[in-house]
Length: 356
Image (cartoon, rainbow, N blue to C red; front, top):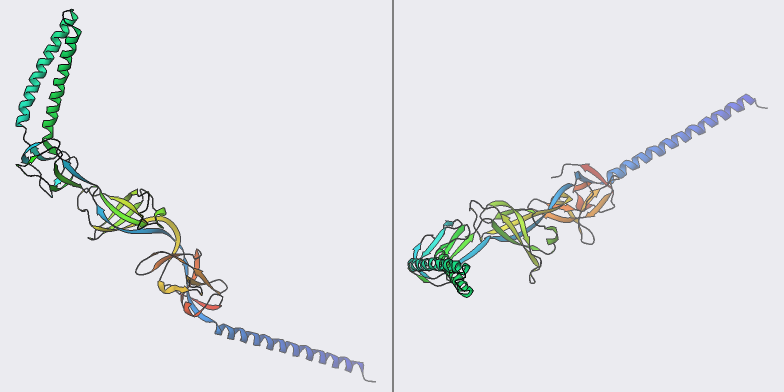
């Protein structure tokens, strides 16, 4: 019979050998797994990303138009006669009540003196018959006749005085004398056009705004106006048409601009930009845009699990360098290089770079 100690020792040796062989196998398995993961990581497509954050951006409504006068007034005569004096010159500024022309008043002054004398006589007559009536020496009818004559004389004097005042034709507003329609020596009738005065202060910029944008525009909004002559000014929306043009489906909008120095003239082409509501948006290069399988314009990003995601975007505003878009989260890892080689759902190897 074999020694039990020898049997026990042999059993321990066999057990240790088995345990060590399992350890080596496990170690080999782990090593193989690491090699596989490294191989898979090497197989992932590398893309450059930029960590971006949305900014507050005012949506700009842009419209084309032109500058127009605040008012254009055709001044007409309120009396008749010969033009004896011309004071204002075309193209020069006029202030309110500046004289444009004068009409002969010589005959009117004679009539005025006659009417004043008659008024004085009728005044005395009325006073005399009124005293006699108080003493019961004058009838009530004679008093009423004298009073009526007095009132007629007062009216006649007032009328001739007003007519004399109308012989001096003045500007009812401040502006530029665009056209004088009569010359010295002309005979004019009542309602004859005398002059055209253009008021360019304030200056009005009339623009047309598309029906899809008009809901964002309100009165008193500030507008940036760029004129065709290179001048830029700020103005305020003062009028919005209550209905659209039936043929163009656009709305007329007036922007009022201070022009106290008269440096701006009416009739100049202009472009207006009106900041409206604010949105969260990204300013991106057009090179970062992609098309989905359905044809939507969007931007590709990488999430925290390094999976590519596609976000459809909406264009808010653009210029020659890029575009403001909405539709992305408030923060995003935007793919800036390699977006054309990956699709939504792909796992990638992101490399953080600065956006160009």
